[in-house]
Image 1 (cartoon, rainbow, N blue to C red):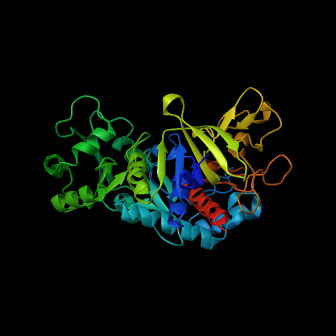
Image 2 (cartoon, rainbow, N blue to C red):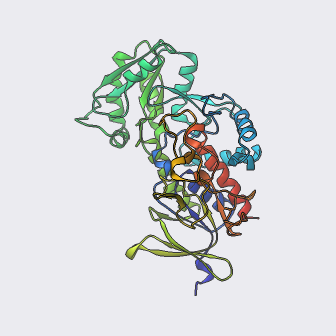
Image 3 (cartoon, helix red, strand yellow):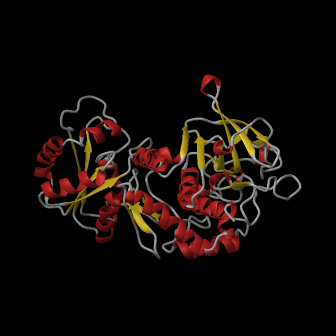
Length: 422
């Protein structure tokens, strides 16, 4: 028999943006929460929080106002998950989520009614809704076309200041770059190692001394996002004091530091909120118990644990988070065996051209939910009264191409928690 004190109110299955957000929102509601899941997309994130940036995807139309974009998406794609949400719910979810990040030392900023133009590792510009405070000055400098210097380092892969400048040379003529040796660095360098090194104020002083001769006539200095792991704003503030310049970060190609920063925030912040985290453990089996509760086997071998919960939130993502699994014939939901909305046959998964502007039908595959975000079974009714879903596992959205991934994950997680707590 399971003792009452071993029963959780909700099991969150997934450790990406949706899973982390669901665990945060549920704990804030006073629920007893346990979370399990493999590495999710959060670990490979640029650190930006997209809300809605591109629609229609085949036209590549980019929106400055994400709320207008959402209205257009819901009008043109009525089954898109945003169609089940009110603006108030989306705004509240983002405020709570970014407020938690700020409390944990990772501040996010942006404009309420507009997307922010942010610089990508490739030197292109994307529209996103919230950016880390450490990246904000880059958007300001871009908007002003201010004199700026991009710094990169010999031996660091996945980031090229020269490429950034070449990509932006017609749009931002006073942008230039310099490549230097990182203080004490030799051979191939990795973002995490640089971030740990820059925790030392003496390393920061040596870094500024190396760059200063190249930065006399610029207002802004941009770096790859390696300016500290646990307290990047402290590193940025110190560099600004040493330089007398405004400093900003640009994400590197994955794996970057932006993802581990977010992961570290939740690894230390969720347990302090009372969440039991079963890190890097997959749900291997689920059973429905008498009384309607779920019993989960989590992990395998000697490390396997059994968890009982009154309700569950499925936030496993798609293929990367192991929420969907593909064989030679069909796409399958991996935990509950829920029906997956997908093309009728494998030939319909992808279009003939890899870079087809319409994207691929498999990108919108996923599970359908009712108005309360409960996954539907084969009958078209909720498969379980106490199972909810959030994030990329939801059908009828192409989060990567629409540029709505993190915002969609956070907002649907908020709604799922609200519904299960009714």
